[in-house]
Length: 195
Image 1: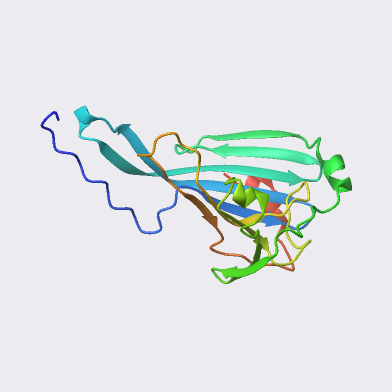
Image 2: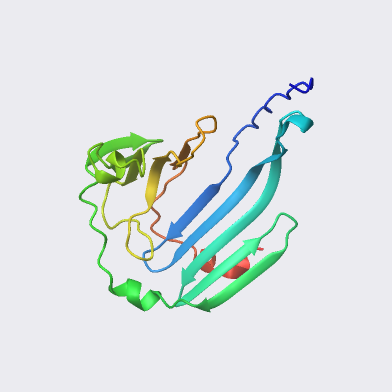
């Protein structure tokens, strides 16, 4: 159209992932650390710039700790800037009284990456309504759960609603490592661990 060659989509680096989440819980305290190792830069995704897409290596993290009645949010930017928001966990007393969320609707057994799961059947409303294409939790109830007693989703496929038929994608969340530990180092819940 403008006589400019379109630049090829870059080759994805080995182990490319936009977001990596680490979750540690002992049933009383919770840690969720989200790392963003790569980003896609599309600021040149226009005809004048040759529709260039760039894959950038970034190093930013967000850490959320709920421990000993505190809610701690730690942000670490690519340049190493660290911000900490440490306040009373106002939800902790409420969450402590909550029963475990009923997961009886997760009835289909499956193993993904060596982790035994229970998944929603294709007839579940979350699947038939297209809120998710697939959703799975750990096979045993009461073993791992969020602070509000809901199960931690270990496998998830979602097709975000997008108006344009020319720009559709699938978001996949899956466990690459899963361990049940009988002892958790308490420093994992110490904000000073994350610099």
